Image 1 (cartoon, rainbow, N blue to C red):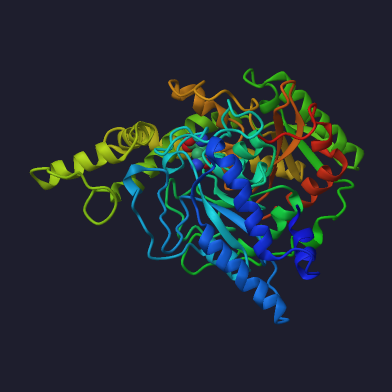
Image 2 (image 1 turned 90 degrees about the horizontal axis):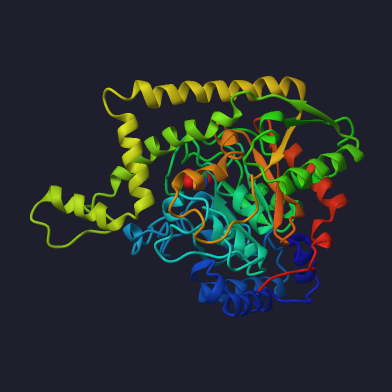
Length: 486
Ligand code: GLN
């Protein structure tokens, strides 16, 4: 159900907020024992919130825009008084004493927290398999991964456990799972949305964004969470346009660039390539002009990211020392061994690998060869985009080189896992907004996602192009087996 449709039903009194919440909780009870999108379902709070909304409606009060919308939150966003684990033993018992800005804005708009969703530990991964609390599975095929790191949020929306969810995207963690699960995922411009209360992974890349069933819903959620925040100095002080009002802005004459380097890549599955190129033809039929552009450094994104992100992670995760909060190993004989043991026992192997890589890349004697070099390449990648935007308005690529892979397929081979972020990482390095939306299915009936990358703060245009594509494509209708869900 679309958020706008829900709002109408609630307003007309056809369905109460309590009924919707109960329905969602039933759905979660029915499918989550096998799919495992949620780490924590906040049923009591959700029912109480829903009752309050129903009372306000009966009393004739004007309801806020997201009144009664059940939303799931990735478990790396702090929710006051509700355990926030980052899917790590390190934070297994962490109850934040404060609320993240994005969630606070959602609750102030009437949205209802339905639960906290699973992720790769500390958002490091592309399959939601590195969670310390067990993997999440893809609702289209439970033997496959939902993508990651926000796999729980993507699976929850795709399977109808909630109307929308929030995730975070450092190198693709909203877009890639959205693509694997057949939903819409938006990573806003770096600084468009506050990071206050998002547990830091790589601070120059992290950004929060929505998972939704449609582009119109994505616009509604972005509207609420975007905008300046004095608590996050990297959050931009720029006006937030009315995203919903511009969804039908004409795409006639819009210049869409296909990034040559993406389509030439050998790792790109042919079914994905064909489906995304067919989407370009559909955009053309709407009046867009399709051209090819070159971003010569695009494919260097992965190598650059896997120096910068671990470097920032090694600094950010230094705070988990067993002293102030987080897991503490008992019985150590001194402070140094307590810290070492706490970190060895509290962090899983992927997190430890990233900390080691990052610490190495930042260490004296190597920092110029690795970290500084990576920052220089990052500047070149950003320059490629700047050049491209002199010629086109929006860039188009597949979101991920493949559709959802089998659980376990890449767990023992980190490099092959890292490759699944090939097409999403460059937008993070350049700080650009990007959206993934369904554009078709492969032979197995698994969703394929297309990615649109916009210029800085151009979410409005991204959403309108995506929305109009969605209207003409009607992707769900072409699924070979009809609708899915376990
Ligand atoms: N999959 C990427 C990684 O493992 C991106 C993760 C993210 O965006 N949080 O780092």
